[in-house]
Length: 344
Ligand code: TXA
Ligand code: MG
Image: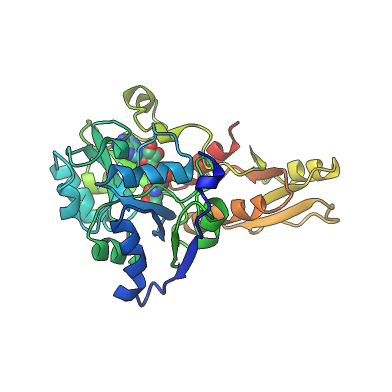
């Protein structure tokens, strides 16, 4: 796809999530109804949406992102009943999970109905669906009255956007409209759970933890790092190792990372150290070392991680040193994204 085909003016429209009117959503709805794409905030990251029932519209998502056609999209709907209409089988398990977590950052993979074009599911027999929690996303879905296929609104393989500015950095000129509802509170993508297999299997760890899912179901599910998972599925083609990658090379280290970061800085490398918020500052501080503080709580770390990586992407920094987060299950999604960002 040549650049000439992407010279759209990209309009950024500010929307107050606490006070949304139908007029606020008019331009977005018009674009979506005529088969165009629109970026909008969700509680996890910004999504790039198109009418999920219109194959030609969905094709534009792949083009704008430069996404391989083999990587299927998540369909967003405004309520569980709308999800049921898109799948050929809605189980009691789906029912319970939807009741417990929707609207929210859990994506369910279910057998699809034929109404969903193959391009949405990358030709596969299942469709990934969720009801997002962000007021702008929900209002848009209700107002437009269509299911919206929406991957994260970044160029393929780049870091997911948690602000409208991040979307603009990646997709300026490639999409007509970004709804700017401020920064995403969650900051990491949804948990993707495959149903219709026994037990249900987490394909991508995310903001809803394995324990939260197991608590609702009353039995164990297969986790993303369980040995059984690798043989069992791998139909989540988006789970390629290098994904969510910043431009600078990221290295995960045991310990707090200070000595590794200092070493690089003394070698003349421009390095960012993702230091824990209570880490002591080296004195003297070598030139070339940028310290970026990371919080000790999962929620705050998740909310901040992509913004921090985007910030680094805007500089000449070439290396990132990040301490490995705690072992606990609750940090799993963060460990997952960091190790993907770290892989070559
Ligand atoms: O939080 C999120 O999930 C965000 C917001 C915008 O909703 N969306 C998002 O979409 O992260 P994306 O396209 O970046 O990631 C979708 C993930 C990919 O790993 C993809 O392979 C997987 O979901 N997926 C989609 N459809 C699938 C299917 N039918 N079977 C298995 N995995 C699927
Ligand atoms: Mg993505």
